[in-house]
Image 1 (cartoon, helix red, strand yellow):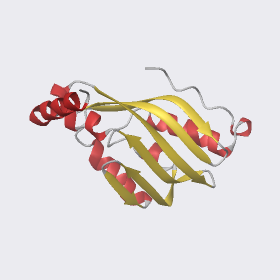
Image 2 (tube, one colour; image 1 turned 45 degrees about the horizontal axis):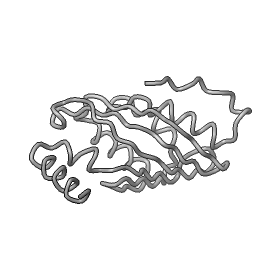
Image 3 (cartoon, helix red, strand yellow; image 1 turned 180 degrees about the horizontal axis):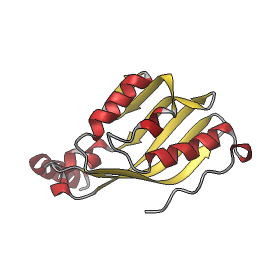
Length: 156
């Protein structure tokens, strides 16, 4: 995986660009015990949504992350592209996760993107887009075979 570059001086970037660099650094390697860097990125009233869940408020978001990462053996992101208009940020990424009950504990690779809206240098809206099946359903033993068969049938 590529390394996240050192943060550039805030004066060289827009507030959203600087925040995007902080997001990349914080999400580089996640776990239930290292969420402090994540917490500082969000407003108290932040809204978060992904294909499986939505939460309102920073406290609920951190609780959701803590619960989500509790059973993961590893979670990291590789960021490919970031587009910012000075307040909104769009980031394309690959997530790498390992969970003991999915894919025989081997790393699962999931392509996705995040849309972030910012206010005063913090995120108040965060929406993740990714294929939940590619992350979860395809790696559950019986369900994975069914999903693979469905995909094969749809491709014919």
